[in-house]
Each structure stands twice: as structure tokens, then as C-alpha cells.
Length: 482
Image (cartoon, rainbow, N blue to C red; front, side):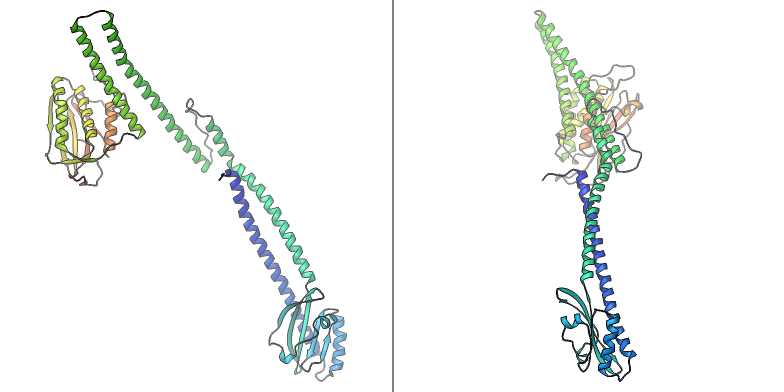
């Protein structure tokens, strides 16, 4: 089904509302006119009955019926003309009969047979509709039946004319309201059309353009502000992608250039086996570094796209620390660092994903080993705080200055120790560690003092071996100090 434009739908809804209103008013007006005419007709018929009563009351009580009939004929012919009127007494004597009534209604109910109250009815005489009223009256001890009527030709003509004028008025009103509704809908949607025209001008090359915001505090201004906020987010996302792409290409260009240079030099002339072995060793190290960089890039890309998912399950804390200790003991020894692992117990379980937690701890331990000079120490510690386990990595390294503390989780950002060179690495590790922590419903806490070391920590919920959380509380534990 084809959807109509908004301005057409607004016009149709507005016209429908006006049509329903006008038809309701028209029917109400027609009903009120009918009722007013009906009341006028009834009052006039009752007035005729009262005039007949007053006439008979003005005559002597024992006046002969023939003389009374003559006087009635003379009086009613003068006062009523050719109106519909018949009067008969209780003995069946006609007091007065107008030609129209006598011809159309030759029989009349005697007074003793007439109802207690008046009766209104309609009949047709020579194709002319007549509204009639029959009522009993009693004067000087004699009962009479009075029938009077009104022709409805003028009434029907008035009603027909009124209906026609009402129909023309409603039709004209609907036409004018439809035109007015279309005009108002176009005028109301004109700011939206202007916003759409401005929005069509914006592309990936001019995302800094913002839509005009009207001064009025209405839906259009809210829409403009919402679209501007969306453009700001899109602009930030594009800037982030451009920065990420530029940094990634720069980080990949260096090891690739080094690999190419080493290979070209090795192939330039024959060399002893020892030199080839040394060259291959350097190529292997650069290849491992580039592999780690590419894996981090792919992990972050999958995380941004929502494709990287973690499957939560109970993880035995002792096995997790044993695996981390097995991986990093040799590396810490080579870096001439003291490495300690501290556990509160061997039967504790946390809810998480094993590989993700191992990777998170490896990132924190690698970061600590890079920024701790030889002779220092690195400690991997777990301590129970209520129904949570706080996992922490302490080091006695260079520390982090306050101005860099908020930037260390940015991608490709690397801290330069005071008085020393920037350690090797891509600057992606802490960004990936932050994402892994967030996927475990926690966050990384940093406590550091320049020259005295740093502490990275995060909290996990305790879980039993079946995988049930022992606590539903939020993970909001403060970081321990180093």
C-alpha cells in the first residue's frame, strides 16, 4: 500500500474533522428547525381550538343550534377564511365545516368518543399534506369535537429550501476547509522541508555543517537540535575512524618497512650463516609484533561492530592466575622484574569468560612490565571484598601523570616516561582491556603516582560452580592503592 505524503494526510484528517463537525452542526440545526416549526404548528392549532371555545362561550347558553351554526359560519368564514376547521356537538350536529375539511375528512368522532387530550395526525387531501388536531371541548354543559388543520406545503417548501442551503453551505465549507488545511499543512511543514534541504547538502566531506535551529521552542527546534546532535556523533565517529585508520596505517608501515629493509639487505650479497640467523631472528620479532598489532586491530574492529562476543561461565580463580603466572613468569625474569601472585583462596569462582580474562590480565601485566625499570616488581593480586573479587596488577614503575591518566585508554596513545624513551607497543592494549572489562559488567580503575608505580584493578562477581551469581549488587568498589 502506497503511503501518502504527510501534507496530504494532514489535509485529509483536517477535512474529515471539519466534515464531521459541520455535518453534526447541520443535523443539529435541521433538527432544531423541525422542532421549532412543529412547535409553531401545534401552538397555532391549539390557538384555533381556543378561539372556537371563546366563540361558543360568548354565545347564549340555550341558543338554538341552527342560529349558533349560522353565527359560527359567519364568524369563522370571516376570521378563519378557508382554513381547515370542523366543529360538531355531542348530538352529531355540525356547528361549522370548512369546505376543505368537509371534503377531505367527512366523518368526525363525536365528543363522547373523543380522547381526553388532543391528538395530532397528518393526512393527505388532494395531494396536499395536512397537519390536523382533534380536541374535545365543553361549553355551557355541551361537549363539542373540534378538528382543525394546517396545510404543510409552505412548511415542506421551507424545509426543502433550508436543506438545500445547508447542503450548499456544508459543501462550500468543506471545500474551503480542505484548501485551508492544505495551505496550513504546507506552511506547517515548510520548516521540515527546509531542514531536509539543508540535510541533503551534508556529506562525509562537510560534517561540520549544522542545521539552523529556530528560535521558537517547538517540535521543529527539537528536531533540529536532535539532528545536530546526531551529526556531531557522526562527525566524531568519522574523525575517530580517520584517526584510527591513520594511526593503524602508520603503525603497520613501520614493521613492514623494517621487514622489507632487512630482507633487501640480506639478499644484497651472500652472508655467513650467523648473519642470516640474526636477520631471521629480527624478522621473527617484527613479525610477532605486527601479528599482535593486527590481532588487536581486528579485536577492536569486531568490538566496535558488535561481532566480538564473550560467553560467560564460572571461572576458577586459581586456574586463571596459574595460567597468567605460567605465561608471564619467564617474561618478567627476562625483564629482570620480581613477579608475585597473591590469591585469597583456591576454591573461589568468578563469573566471566576465561580467554577474555586471561587476555585482560595479560594486557595489564605486559603494560606493567614495559613501564617498570629493571629491579622493580610486579604483583598480580586478588582479594575478596564482600561478595566481589577485586583483581589488581601493581607495579613499581614510572607511574602516570594526572594529565595522562584520562588518556591512557585512548587508542594508539602511549605514555612517555620522564627521562626515558617511549616503550615499544601499539598503544591498543589498554583500549582493548577497557572493552573486555566493560563486557564483564565492570570497569578498570587506575591508581598511580609518578615515580612510585601504578595499580590497575577491576572487580568481578563471585559465582558458584553452577554459574549462579552470589550477589546482584553493582560493581562499584574503589581501587586499592599501590
